[in-house]
Image (cartoon, rainbow, N blue to C red; front, side, top):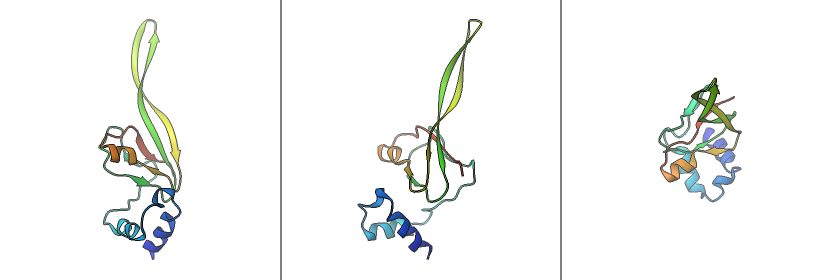
Length: 114
C-alpha cells in the first residue's frame, strides 16, 4: 500500500517521467531507499561526499552555504564564516543529484525546515 502511494507520487515528479514502470518499482523496493528526518535535522553537510540524490516527499528542506566574510574593525581585519540561506525546496523537489552525478563533494548543507 505504501509502495503504491509512493509510485503514484513519483509519477507526478518531472525527474521520473523518463523512468519505466519497472525502474520505478525497483527504485521504490530498494532497502534503505527512504529516510525520515526531524525538523532542523541535517540531511548532509557542505563538503560531504555526494553519493545520493534526495526527493522531498513531505515538508520543506533548506539549502545553506558556508562562506567567509571580512570585517574591518579599527584596521583589524577578521575573517568569519557565515551561513547563507541559498534556497528552500518543497514537496516534489529533487536535490543532491549534481554531486552524485559528478562525484563531487556537497556544495551546500541540507537541513529540514518542516
